[in-house]
Length: 387
Image (cartoon, rainbow, N blue to C red; front, side):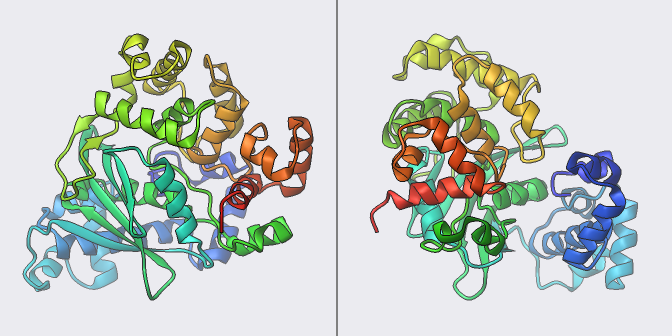
């Protein structure tokens, strides 16, 4: 819904991707949310439209499209039906709307939620100039294309002190890209997780750190590049090279935060580079070739690094890229594809946590954690950190 897949392909196609009938999807969705998928989507769009009408000076027509409606007529009709007034009337009744510098939202989650652990994970891997984690607050720059137009800005995410929700602050420059932007935040912060269900499947492993999440990706290509740069080096070393990469090929941006200066480069930008330009940043030439090959596949749409991508075919495409082995493919699936059963079983940290030196035995042990092996990986990594 949030990335417009439902609008573009229809409920039947979405159900087919899930391997179920559209009738079963409607039934399951209704049991979970109490309304049909269409009603749910309409409500989310109307709530977003209300926020834009009261907090921005976007024209009503732009509010309609920014909220995810395909036509202004449909927007006006549903708005009047739900709120007994036209969109323009709400704006006139609002208290002096102005050109606010930021928009604020709250995204709920199912507790428990180990926010400190997630911040620690993202902070250790934050790309200089692009991301920062300070005082329990995650900030980053953003680039999102919507309807052929590119929107740039920044976001800030922090935990609400009083309710199970994350507070998201968005620069006004991203107002026209809110549905996909908020969808990316939800993926990055793993807000769709059912922690109780995961804990029941993992058993004793999950008891020490309840609510541990699997960090996703705000930008699937960015995380994939970061994964390749991190091959056979420490987290700190990979972070250093990733910072150089962003500074060399990213775009400058002005933000209120001194640490946020750069927007991560697009796949198209990297696809057109000679691999030597990347290798000179401090990595083997083979690794630079892998980054360029990845960028070309993404830029040409041969490789889609988003949560709704088909898992098996995407893994096959990743493995076919030069220099991309099973660890890299599984790590990308774990984060860029938000696949809860991804399992980088050759990871040295995973093997150390299990006291194993044979990757085959690690893979066999992982069978007990299906379909939540990615969460098992997070718990294994967490077990290696000092309390």
